[in-house]
Amino acid sequence: MNIPMLDLSREYQAHKVAIDAAIEKCLSQQHWILGPEVFEFEQAVSQFLSTPHCIGTASGTEALLIALRAIAIQKFGTEFFTKEQKILVPAFTFTATADVVLRAGATPVCCDIDLETFTIDCTQVAEYLDQHADVVGIIPVHLYGHAANMQALQSLAQEHRLFIVEDVAQAFGGSYEGRALGTLGDIGCYSFFPSKNLGCFGDGGMVSTADSDLAEILRILIRHGGEDKYNASHVGYNARLDTLQAAILQVKLQHLTLGNQKRSDIAAQYMQGLAEIASLDLPIVKPWCTHAFHQFTLRIPADHRQALQTFLQERGIASMIYYPVPLHQMTLFSNAAECASTMLHAEKAAATVLSLPIGPYMSAEEVSAVIQAIQDYFIAHCPNLI
Ligand SMILES: *Cc1c(COP(=O)(O)O)cnc(C)c1O
Image (cartoon, rainbow, N blue to C red):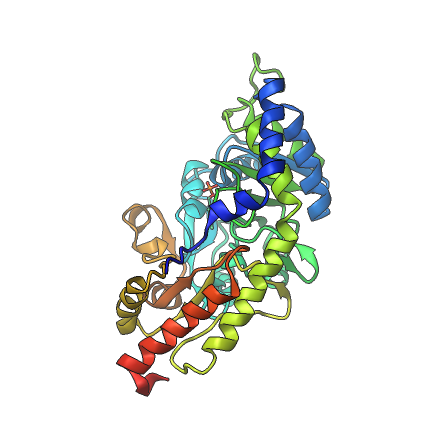
């Protein structure tokens, strides 16, 4: 048996004819930088998310960075933030969410998470904001595909005049109260890293916004900071989405909804199959959220996590820990970031989370095999925990 976290080759085989044709077309056109496919794909995503402006970027990380830079320029009239300006981030996320804050000049402030949804703890955010006037914005992360509590965050943002940049890297196609994730804050940032729900054949990303002035600044920043390439007006980047990636993404976008549906079906099968193991905390889906199930992540008592991973591995089943170290304990951020308060939930998550294989082309038999293996582990090693 060999069950990887995600089998990208199956996805490619399923759409090979259309993808190969799209690549062939690029080869014949030789229009590699900002070719027509980039614009067509931006339009297609714009329609998919029901939001006016979408701009392709070189990666999800660059999307987050230029989002912050564009807000500094538009809202504060400066190229970069200053260290005195604080931006709130969840302590439990991928490093890119917070290192862009440093690259944009501001100071990240880590906030604890809600353990049910693994998203930023709005109560702690509210408490921090009541005591600190130097916060300018907040970056909620829709971790694993589950929406953060956007209504709570929107009202806090309004009250304290903060911007919201959504990190949607793990939640493309997910929604909050029926609205596409990424369209609820000032700017949404998406990643097309190969393993994401919508992935390309290399690096790629996107920003979305309803504000046409911001959109203009974002477009300028991805191409060296000038409307005119040879007369820059801002500190820009070379951060465009490749034509080739856009062509591949155009094909794959058509299968995204079905792919997310299949992820959701697999999650339901896991939930049912693992429900009886009392010591596992299975994912919770809040009623406000359509979960994109980028990951199926459960929590297991810390002293059993490594043993279960080894047990699964012996049966050829992959599993991953996203993420073993919360931001505030990373070498970089332990110096460069602040903590809003205690980070107990983030630390607990880092010690107990385990992600299981999931993807649109995983078969029901494979899901059953994973469930069976986990049941066998508990029966063999700790029947008292069932
Ligand atoms: C993947 C990811 C990113 C970065 O996206 P890249 O395209 O790899 O640069 C940012 N934030 C989160 C939460 C991610 O999972």
